[in-house]
Length: 463
Image (cartoon, rainbow, N blue to C red; front, side, top):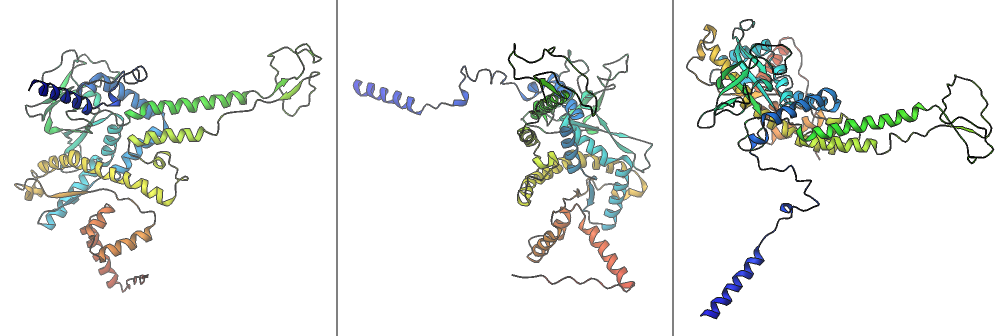
């Protein structure tokens, strides 16, 4: 038995050597040591610490303020996600009560400038990494409901003194035993404010019910957001430096109106001329050159043929982390055909829908709940008492089709094939189908009263 057991042991060791796996990406050698020098195993909150996020915010804000492309893409995201603002549709059993709530909320949203504040929050989410909105009371509002949304910059939500961390708080956010936000620590003065306050670390403890925190969690356990354009910050800097370098080279070449040069040897027959001498030229004049010298100009080598291509490649890399097509970042679709332009926008519109859904759940539903809580205390909204949360949905601005005729034909076929509904088709346009049908019924009724004939639809072609 002993030889057999010994042979079996050798065989097991051989098999172990055969099945051992090896990952090239886990190997550290002289060639890649510097590249992976900054790779760490920090947790999500430790990697996005208060100091790191402060540096990222400052650099992101600097690029957005000084780089036209960065400013444009942030504004584009805010306009495409929020647009003219959300529109509420209440789905309760009482149609008249639904209409009253919808109209009252629309008037309140206009009074507080809800659409503008949501666009600002979307810009802050891209540039600062997170957006805070505090639900407060504003007696100066013209709306019967006095709830207001006060935006708070991310710098103000922090521990009052980072040297003395508060137990159970992650940089200004306190959590309960289940990981739910319990309160937010909001500084009364911005840390970067020029106002000298005697109590610079004075803060308010805002309950979680009164604070809206909107950010994208990229890792499990992440409680604070980092700027969405973080991967693109070095690229923005490279783009600006390259543009300035090309411009500087072109300006340097253009600064020399003319140069004198000679083909004669150093001790040849050319007239002696002081080297590097500068002569001011007059307009429309004739002159005589020194003997043996010729007049020439410096040939400008910048911008080169690869200048535009390099900028487009950098912008494409910048756009990828924001899920924005390159033609949206540049505002130029001259290098796209119709099919490629639509294909690029399909993924972009999908990311917009995902963003709007997140905005509905984190921000809009919280605002509506606060609004209903105040509205039910008023006499005109007494019917809301005891109802709790209302079934509802939000509508956002739709996207316009490049070819409206083709889209109308496709809508007609989908409706005939029962593969869609009027609610879905109107929702794509950001409209409430019930409101549109009621409006259409009023128009038809008024047209009949005035004796106006309805236009007949053109027969559709087949084949």
